[in-house]
Image 1 (cartoon, rainbow, N blue to C red):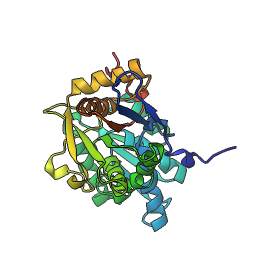
Image 2 (cartoon, rainbow, N blue to C red):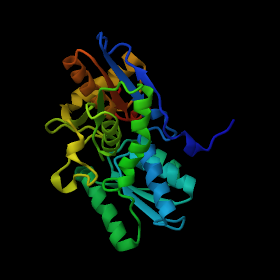
Image 3 (tube, one colour):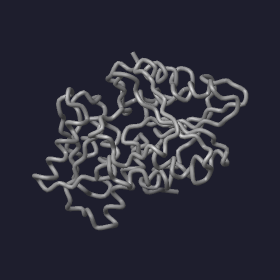
Length: 294
């Protein structure tokens, strides 16, 4: 039996913590988004944004796409754009790991790097300039409702079904916030008592894939009413927990997944009974050129 690659986006497994959490009455489940064909949770949003734009006629195969990204969205967009035969330029800070840049280029995307000091904000400004001055079209993951709707259609239902409706807490790192917005919207419809927990860096910590946005750059798709709690984690906690995921659970994932897991473990300490689902955003192999696993 054969599949279209697009059919393999989503339907990722939930696996129970074997070692990081051993607490009677409390279950911690990891949703392994690195199992997507492009290697991250962003495959879902990329597919839904491009497919919806094609179906509506907003873009065609002659469209030139541009997007600012810190990594995973860019890889996902590069893969999906290639499947649809669309040209894409991806703009990202120059301190992105080599693996991410090379993966995007392998899929045929043009990659433009901006000064690291300007962060993703400078990349977003350059993408806006491409749209205004050069006729590019930007799907804009930060304001595109098809980003969060991808998770309303897939991630939320998968979690509900795979836990037989027993999920009590959902934990997700917050970047574009699409994952937490869409999943929250679905789960709250099923059971308003489910607690939605967002994860952000503390203080001045820098954690790839997790952001505490300046007000001017806050994603337009973000709705604070859909997040019940925000837990902050340090870069050191995220780094250490990413390593623990690999060494204790056999789950090889990136730093943002470490941050979400660190928050989930903090949450578990507060509970006597509950089923926590935490998103494992991607795979660790795209961080090997960094010092994450040294």
